[in-house]
Image (tube, rainbow, N blue to C red):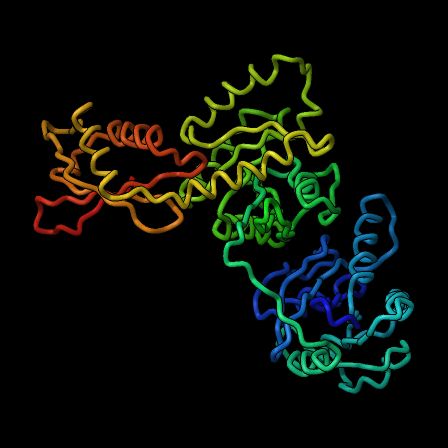
Length: 448
């Protein structure tokens, strides 16, 4: 086994043997979706794991079975790629069932790879006999018994794996930019994910709901590490089914929280959808960078040289509440503007880190107040005294004054517009907190 790279462990087996439960148990967190139905995992999910002083990558794969159509063939091909790149292959079977033809096929495929192979007899808690002697028939010498759902035997499994792995450390880049792809089902997220990652990591199919887990790939662009997250499609609340699909949507929402910049994909042939606007609102409220990505530009109906100029104002009107979000038209098929997305991500990240000196801010505040005195409510005229910027990667400003609770919402919008005109902050939301200094409770604040 090569000692020049971090080793990879691939978990394989037929459908519903508990591969995802084992994957989660090793990670000590719910990374892959686990449900009591076959075929839950479709994409190969990779995550960092550690045991002792050894780091390794672990890959959860879909259940092996005969490829009955092109979609299923893509899944099986992806499993083959995962095992081909792995250093150790962990074949998982169910302890309480007899050996099946699929189990034999998986074991044969693993052994044929000439890689290190171990057998994990899972769900041992359901078996009448806890002995693993019977499973030696599969020809795999190293065998571990586990109950992944209850974390049984997982520590022993990791100890055994550790003996097969070389010392290795996965270096984390603190300056890594995390970018998530979000949108409704079947708007082209996985296709763009593959185009950005320049490899076939996620399954692409012309059907809604293909991606369920969060897929990740890291790339280098202009000497900057960028991690891209492909998420499941977000449906309207009334259309979200219980079980696996609900977990997928929760993970999509979680991806927003993990991200620095979010790409909201909008199907060029399905514009004006209210759910797209709702997702943009969620990203804005989370304080994340946002790029509006019009996808499938190659398939736009009746497209000519003027189509983009006609559609751009319509889209801007639909997303008037995020006028700071850049708009880009892309095609994952032709590659049009795919690289420009990286440039936008770098620009937005730079804007999010932009800190304006307090002295400069206050000169700006005085100039704005003179240009347009604060508008108030109930015959109260607020007085804005000074402001500071909080030191974080979500541009946030504290504004101190008197009677700030009477400040009209239109004036707050005016302040944001003027601030952006002066200092930029394109692609990222801005947050104002107003503190009232003429009240006994000087810590009272109101956010915008």
